Length: 365
Image (cartoon, rainbow, N blue to C red; front, top):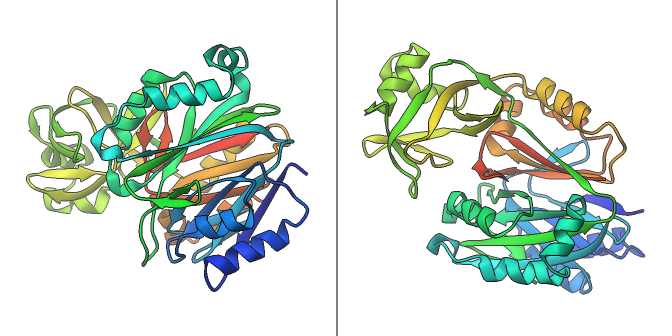
C-alpha cells in the first residue's frame, strides 16, 4: 500500500509519535506529512525520533481532517512510501518577512533531481508543497518570487492555531516561525490540482484598487474612493453594517474565468484589512459564497474520475467555520471518505499566489 492516513489524539507529542509508529509498523514512509493541533508542543521532533529515515513536514492547525472525520486537538498524518513518491527534497526558508532571494534554494532543489531539464522533461510527475507560517504575512511576495525562479507548481497552505499554542511550520526535526517549508515530490504516477472557492460573482461591476498597503494587507481605496463606501454601495447596505458581510461577500480577482478570493478582515486605520493583500492596479469584483458542500462535490467529481493514491485538502478556516455554522461538517467530510485523505483549516491557501476562502486540493495519482 502506497499511502496510509491516521488521525491521532494523545497526551502529548511523544504519545502521538508512539501511536503513529505502532500504526505504521512495517510501513516505510518516504514522506510523512502532518497537520497538528497547536496544542501539541514540537510534534516534529517526536515524529522524527519515531521515523528517523523519513522526510517529515507539517504545520500547526486550528482543526484537522482525515478521511471522513473532522477533529480538533488531534494530529492528521499521511505517510507516503516509494510506490507513490519516489524522491522527496525538503528545504526550509527562514525569515520570509525579509523577502529572501529564492534562487539559490530552488537551484539546489532542481539539482537534487538532476537539474531543470530533468524536471521539465517529466513535468507531469513533479509537484511542490509549500507550508507557510502565517504570522509572517509574507505569502503574497514569497509566491511571486517563487514563480520567477521555478516552473514547478507549488500548492499548500498557511498555518493556523487552536485556542492555545503558536503558529508554526515543521521540518528537519525542528519547528519554525516566520518561515516556509518547501518540498518537491517526484510522484510515480503524476498528480492533479483542483481549486474550489464556492464563490461566484455577485456584481459584474469592476472595481479598481487605487490605494493599498500590500505588505500590511490594508485596502484603502477602490475607484479613488474609500473602499468601505464603494463596497457598501455595491452590496446596497449601510456603511456601518459592512463588517457583517465580509465573509459572505468577499472580493475576487477574476482571470480567465478563474476566481481568486480575497476576504476582508476588519476596519482599521482608515481602511480595511485583508487576509490576502491586493496590489494597486488590480481589478476586483464583489463575490457571494454559494453552497460549499455541493460545489466541492462537483469539483471533486469532475477532477478525479479515477481512483487516486491520496488527496490533500488545504481548506480555508473561513470555509470550516461556514460548514460548522450551517451544520454541514458531516456531509462535507463524507465527500473525502472515498479517498485516503487528510487536510487542515488554513489561514490561506497557495496556488499560483496566495488566496483564501478556498479549498486547494492536491491529488496524487
